[in-house]
Length: 434
Image 1 (cartoon, rainbow, N blue to C red):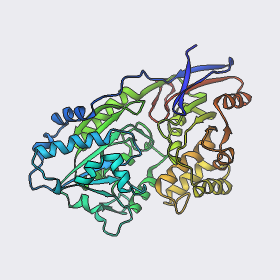
Image 2 (image 1 turned 90 degrees about the vertical axis):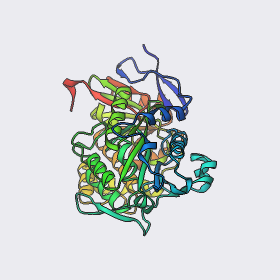
Image 3 (image 1 turned 30 degrees about the horizontal axis):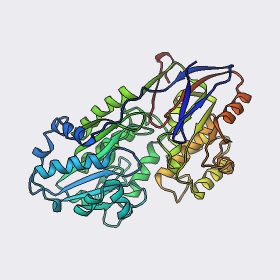
Image 4 (image 1 turned 30 degrees about the vertical axis):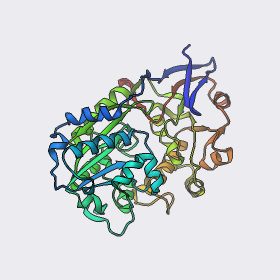
């Protein structure tokens, strides 16, 4: 039998299935060396942008440039990409005084200057103006509305720019289909109220799902607002299953993103013959608190209703007590109808955790929907049984214990093993598609 493993605790953790469990798919990708020259790759991409003239030919000496750059939650080589972009602007004789770099925090926490230096380069932070986006700042500027009518406001540094560049990364995303593209502008440098409503309205319903752009209202509204907000040019890193850079794409925001999505589909799609009774999946590369729930999106695509998901997760940032209390209280209030209740609450533009940010509510929804649809056993050295209980999950200290627990309930099972659950794009065989 194939040597099975998942990405957990910073390494490849081996596992063995019981003889009565039948392996259907071991969703491991072929490894490749990590690129040694992201700056060079970016420079090459900048020579042939998608449906756009080269960057150095697109800007004028008098332009005020805003570069929106993703925050540290993704492991893309953002500093190296930024250096290549700044070199290109220098070649176009744009002085540093006319460039501002806005950190696309969405509703995430602010970075200190020391953290900025560590992530983006201390020399660059000293030479250029770096600013944290604040989604609740009083000086955000209206640029339009959501389809629902809620006003969308933008970071003033971005609004005032005459040319805006977005630096992000492309990977499967639970609601937008794929990360990257216009998301660097909306929601990443927009106002809290618009971000919240957009997320609540479209998430976990219809065509707003992992790997899908066609007819996806979550994605469509992102594109509309990126246009309205004046996003001119993107530089996106396509990330592989190890969260390494695979390719850089750049150019017109929508078309360059779609070109990158095509690459991402090619390298991250994995066909599954049918839905499993048991799915063993790693949260890799996610390890920051609430982000560890994201692999439940691909798990839900490949696990039958009433099945079992064993989620192995490193958790470098503790789950807040308010998050755990929110899960507990929602389960007490709506036990037995969690899926229906989550969609009702979101559909009425309410939150599971009333004082929680959108990403907290999205993560809580994923946890609640998962426990409604199937059994979840959480394996983690960073999370206690008490915490797992509050989430509504079962708990195991290690993979062996989780598999033994699973065998008690599912003595015979069809099994999928997914080593890198945070980056996979699952595709069901045509005769088993949903």
